Every structure is written in structure tokens, then in C-alpha cells.
Length: 429
Image (tube, rainbow, N blue to C red; front, top):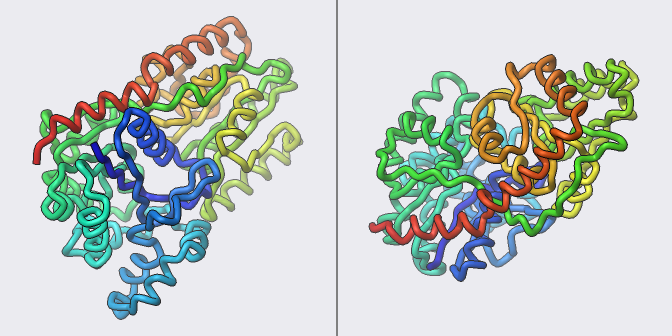
């Protein structure tokens, strides 16, 4: 079976769990004997320091579609100019700019993308369809998320293949838009959902959220958890000398980094945690600089700068070293998440989780036994839960072993790929 996954690239400036998910999935499909490739849209897909191979083009180049949306006279730009804006150098530049991964200000572009052939990116859509139709000739096309659904109808009709769509954190993008656009985008997504043969939600929690919003019939909705390759991660006993709290995600306000910083400050006021460290990795965008500087000033004012380490490299090799140095991992995302791949990477490495009682976090932690939940999502509640676990090495070890075993049993992407292939085989156009 030939599977083409269409995945938004992010340029490699921060830790992208969705991108890691899609990359691991494609690798598992290939290992199972299928022909699986990833086609990036918007920006190059950079994984563990490796960028999308040059023979695979980036469709819907971020610079081109933005300029065409904003400036009507550029919608018929000459081919040489289009190639220039779609060059790897220009796309790398775009990836580093503030706002390149932010929904605010991109409401009209999001709407236009969802309109498909009726939007201002119809030329880009036809390029993608022709590439699939005449070059790749897939058996199934799989979208990384529902924000790509404007492509579904034309792909399904011209390429004559089933279209599948994963569901993960689309609400994070849409619900921060200007109010006048939010319901309009949700309604448009519900309409475009009719062009999809199967939806794959990454958690039971998010399946319920998106089924209601997109009005998806039961027979077209499946739940398949995210997976990783357990063989890529080595088991570690949670660090104790010194103990350390780890954070792995884009360093930003939305992911709750300030809650973790404030909880860390509270813990450091307790003599029991005099040697406690905070280790942070996952990268950032230009939008995050002011927020991060605020956190750094807060730590410096309390003479805690020396107890906090920011690690710029989040490649797989660097993460192995990161997990060896921490005791627990906490990413207190303000509104929860549909899943959070970093949870599996930590569990596979023997590191317990401490997450808020939001989104799919309880579902994953209860299923794995590899962590603890706290509520509400505040610095006080988080610091109390962290203090409780850091003071109980025996409990930490039980969580460490349970979480590690659960990844191999329930979240192995090889086993999940078999289930996904079975879903594909039962689809008919």
C-alpha cells in the first residue's frame, strides 16, 4: 500500500510533537512493508536535525501563500518569482519570523485555505493534486490535521483515492482567532469534513471534542493513540543527585511555562529542595522572546538563574541526555492538549509525568500509570504535587517502571501502524 501523509512543516525552530508523530508513523509504515512518504506544506519538515529531502518539494510555500493572500497583484506572479519565494533559503527565513506559527492575524488565510479550489491558493492546490496524480499515485492520502481539509475534495475526486485526516489540537489554532472568525472557521471545517473517508483522533477526549464540532458520524471516527518507537529510547532511573524538573515543548505562555517557573520558585523556597534544578528544552519562535525574558528576570531576581538550564538542542541524541538528567517532566499546558507526544518520550525513558487535570492528560497518565495529575492548573497546585512526588522516591520508581512498560505495550508505533493499515484497507471511495 502506498500512503502519502500531508504534513505542515515548522522549519525546525521548536519541538513539534505533531511532526514527530507523523514522522514516526511513516517510518513504522515503511518498516511494515508499505510505501509511506511525507509531503510537507508551508515550511520544510525538520526532524532531529534532518530536513525534508530535496527531491520532495514543499507545497503551499509559506511565503508564497501569505503574499498572494495579502497582495492580489501577486496572485499571478511569474514562475521565477514563485520559485524564489519557495526556495529553501526563503522558507528557512520565514520559519524564524514571529507569527509564522501563530493563528492571530492569519484568519483570512486560514479561511482561504479551507475554501480549497475557491480560495486564493487554488494554483497551489492544483500543483499538489497533479503531483499526487501523476508522480506519487498513492492508495490513500492522510492529512496531519483538519486545517488541511480544503484540499480533500479535489484530491479525492481527481486522484481517486480515500482521504484520511488525523485530529489533534485544531482548537488551539482556531480558538485564539478573532471572535468574528472562530465560528465561521468551525462551520467551514464541518462542511469540509464531509469530503473525508475516515478521521483518526489521537485520544478519546479529543474524539468527543471534534465529533461535536465537525459533526462526524460514528462510522467515520476512529481513536488511535499516538505512538513512538520504544527502541529509540533508553530507560533511566529518575535523577536524584541532583533532582531536576524537566520541561520539553515549545517554550511559550500557552504551554504553561510560566506556571512551571512559578512552581519552581515556590519549591526552591523549601529547604528540602535546595539542590533542585529546572531543565528546559524544546525551542521557541520569535513570538516567545518577550515572554521568556520576563521569566528569566523573575528567576534572576530570586538568585535562581544558576539553577535553571536552557538546552537549545532537542534532537533525539540531545533528548537522551536530557532525560538522563531529570527526575520528572511537567508541561502544564494552559488549556490541556489532545495528547502531547513528549509524554511518551518521557515515559519511554523512565521519567514520570506531572500534568494538569486537563485535556487528554488524565487519559494518558491513567492508561500508563506513569505519572500524576494535579488540579487546578496553578503554580500552587503544581508545586504541591511536585513536592509530594520528589519526596517519595519509591513512588517515583513505581511510576517510572509502569510508564516505561506501558509505552512498549500500548504506545508502540509499530503496533499502532498495523491498526492504521487495517483502517485504510476497509476504506472505499
